[in-house]
Image (cartoon, rainbow, N blue to C red):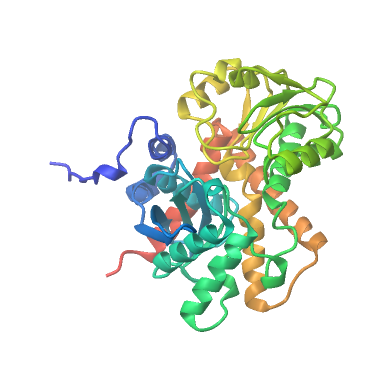
Length: 428
């Protein structure tokens, strides 16, 4: 009789949740892994899951409790690497999937990291600055036992930034008794952060977008671009596309969607968002009443740069773009992938498209260890080279095997992870 592998309930798919999406992606790539498929169960089981209680004293003297997570999916190729998000909808399924996508992403662009991710289920807008700091420091203290410059290196993600990273670094350092700048990336420049890090994810989206457009014979100049999410990824990608001559015809954020067929003034939109916290009310555009209309906007390039599972079986048929660049992690479900493929839409998957952030995080980590820092031009040149080489390798594999870019990226990433697993063997 075949050996039965008992799977803990929290590792099995829950409907179409993020972890279920990831497991389906692994199932799709397994037939392409050859003899390494014997190790594939490694990819379906996170190495370590830590769930912590994060109690803080509120400004009014009451005690509040928040649930925090840190998941280390795989460390076969190096220390865990992945962001920390503060969001009211954070779940274990989401953090597990995000950590797994980090494993594949880091391997696909060939940086020497494993995959990890963290989060706290909280709406940070409901916290004062003091409460936010106390929550960040308590969370860091709780996960202190599994993070470290050679173990697991957090970074910014949704609703976290360089200030959060500074508090995390300081808390970890105080517990260690010495400054440990390499414990996090995405830090302020004054604390060992890297030039170019803040723009890195959006810049990476732009770089692979240009590569994909060239493969499709599309001129970026004059191309119509629609962007979902106008934060650190979508906003920067929009700016770089606009500077290259593209027209940003639509932007959607957490409040509304704005459109202008002639092209939005991206700098003016960013100024408006800085002043008002949203694109809502921007005078140089029309607002769409129905958020779902965003997916039907006539465009050449679509950049989903918000949260996961935005493009689904329900809206994939509406998409009119030629190219989708996944600025967010996991924005497209497998069922939607199939629809887009049948409709001739080229999807550049998240594990390649948004890997610019972790690539420059790697640069930051290296610079911290050497105490030698590079110029921003050097950072951007190195980032561009790595992104182009990773895209070219994935594109060639997709052509050779007649598979989608996502499957090709997963073949590259999963093969590297499982080769490392096989070579290391099992201990004891």
